[in-house]
Amino acid sequence: MFIKEYENEVILPREIFKKYKMDTIAYLDIEATGFDMERDKIVLISLGYYLKEDQFKVVQYFAESPSEEECILKELKKSMKNFKKWCSYNGTAFDEPFVIRKMNRYNLGFRLPSEHVDLFRIIRPFHKKMGMKNCSLKCVEKFTGIKRRDEISGAKSVEIYNEYLVKHDDKLKQILMLHNYEDVLNLPKIFKVINIIENDLDLKRKEKIAKKQMSLLNNNVHTNQPLKILTR
Image (cartoon, rainbow, N blue to C red; front, side, top):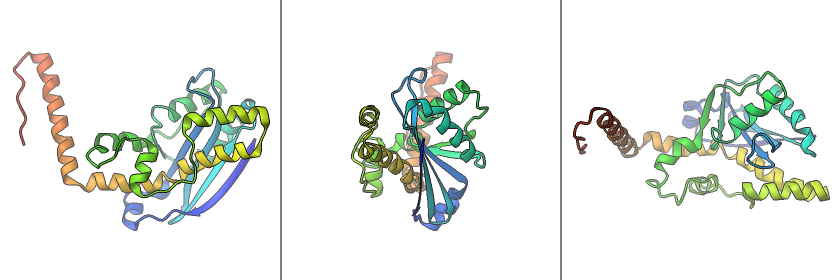
């Protein structure tokens, strides 16, 4: 197992930092050998958190062999014990169930903090209105003005890890770690987008209308009454 730590300045407007209590959140991203939670392995975990305002730390746990999966999960367990809230990008679909399944498999007696801020789920209903081509992490980062050094995709990371297992080339490891590191380093910056959504009355109004329309549709299904048309 290989562990690497970084400290960087991640500066946000003070009102955003205070509003979302950024220093109480653990920022998390994982890489795995595939998407099958039974057969595939978690091989890289990045965990970020604020040491103080503007000072952000990232710790990476890299499995130099898939057999070290349990080792990196134990390290994650120790590091997460002081957090009651965590943040991801689409982690409710991938990171959360994957980590929980693996923790249970090794009987580590750990579950992720129950409060999960999934930035993808918050942004997805609004990304088109905000002018984003899609809701991928890199597209949202670009909207936020973030420029990445990493150039690979999550799918490509699987290929690179398999190549690393054959060649044990340190350059391949660094490519993987950079990809995962930037995924976590950029999560706090995306709260700028969340703040825009929450402060834009037009976006909130359209969301409210959509919810009312869905509620009326559901009521119509059960009552067989004519559906009322909701107008502005």
